[in-house]
Length: 267
Image (cartoon, rainbow, N blue to C red; front, side):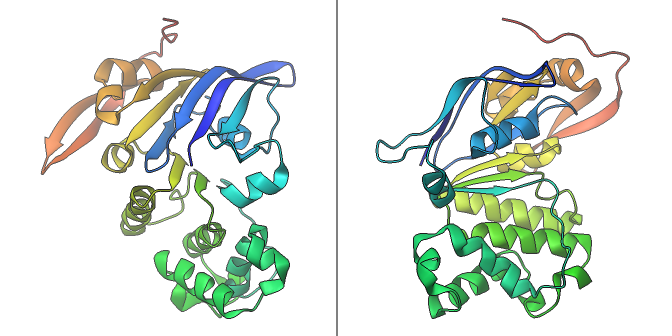
């Protein structure tokens, strides 16, 4: 299911955070949202999830039978993974993941503890390389292990649209690749996957398209190989880079922080 953002505006404490943003997140694609700190990435993702209400513009599920304004419809179709997750109680990992299914019609009707639920939890943990943690208390896990468990909880929602805010920032390099590969596979299977991220090389390798934000506006939207040019990365991130092709992959090689960051193009 496609998700569309149309002319979104959002202000926080009288300061405009999102300014006229339009973008489409199509099913079957992995989309990366990138930009410098303070660009509005997390705010945009929360607007897309329906957790914030825009001051202008709207968000739409591109399906005539799905009304984005209804919380139950959003919960059924959209899974959201925030940047920060807290584990306050020593709940078993399998039970934490099971909570992800409460938005679904079957589980909400009283199927907690059913065979279907147990299978969904088991599969979600396996996909996130966390099945061996199933009986442990989540408070006893490392930050990276917890991150994989919370991702499994997201997958247990079985949502069509997955919105993830920096899902790999706590992971070691091998786990980063595994999780990004998983998200790319989920997109190819037909889901809509939208990931806020900072790693330009992971975006180049795994994202079908990227949205580059700057000062609350879309500076560029397209295939990452076309969006990540040296001039644009210097202007937006204040970063001098060289672009490299290696073993079939494009890579961004950071050279140095440039002297200044210029205002974005308004064209």
